[in-house]
Amino acid sequence: DAEITQSPRHKITETGRQVTLACHQTWNHNNMFWYRQDLGHGLRLIHYSYGVHDTNKGEVSDGYSVSRSNTEDLPLTLESAASSQTSVYFCASSESVSPPYNEQFFGPGTRLTVL
Amino acid sequence: GIQVEQSPPDLILQEGANSTLRCNFSDSVNNLQWFHQNPWGQLINLFYIPSGTKQNGRLSATTVATERYSLLYISSSQTTDSGVYFCAVESNNAGNMLTFGGGTRLMVKP
Figure (cartoon, each protein chain N blue to C red):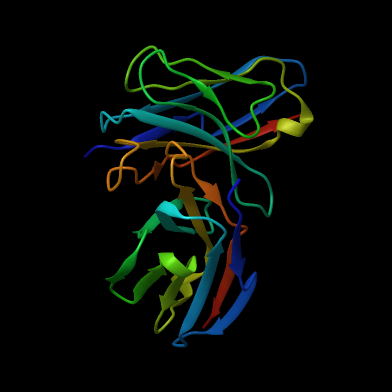
């Protein structure tokens, strides 16, 4: 079955280290997204991509970067991890920007702790 | 940007009871999704419903796009329904970017 996976599922790192979170989808979806969820809140968009070599900043992009070298993967990099980036990170994908193919499907999440 | 408000923020039910969760949004939308976040943190797609009514078992949803709200109905609630329910919307011409509401935290007691 097609799916979207994230790795690692849990990560503890130290302030100042570079961290990369992986996201892989097998639906052949064009669009991919990264969100963060802080305790007790909804999700906020970090970065998104409409296709290979396309990346865009979302609402809370400072301190994060992404690159899209193929359809299946959108890794999220924290250049220099900060304690404020302790959060749960979700990756999502969708087939198209046009209804009804703009439904987003989410991965299981990565819980990141920055000490 | 578009504003999304969910109510109530918290809800406690006895098993078997029915409930209605509401999502209000401030602009026209071409995507509205309801999610259930279970106690393990996983986001489960419940409905893709930018307009109209859908049903899936004990759950149903209605979106009245012209009045800018959506309702999620849970009938005969079970303990496994516990968790947080999120509404997320994409305004027209927003390029498939979802804005999430703050969620409704549901606890179903046995």
